[in-house]
Image (cartoon, rainbow, N blue to C red):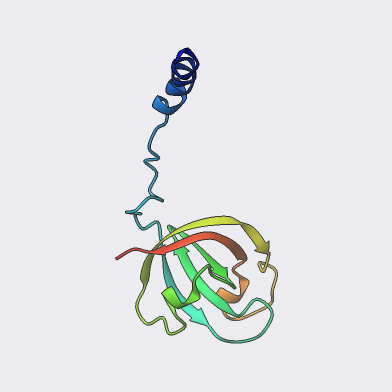
Length: 114
């Protein structure tokens, strides 16, 4: 009995100090970007999804769940996205298409916001 009480009093402070994560990545994420296009061309720095984040435009060549967005993007799709860093710098690519010069980023998480 004494051992059980001591164990309970040791564990109790750790369990009561837990806090619920209130970040937007929980069940109701808020849109922080929008997928505006998908480029199907297979050339260096051409292929992939084009994402508008505020005033920045980036590209991604893979998504955690590509079927959630699809490949025929007609209207902007609001999304919550967490980036994992730049994968490829395309800023020096010679092109008349401004989207080709946008760099590729890795996506840690992407949720469609409905």
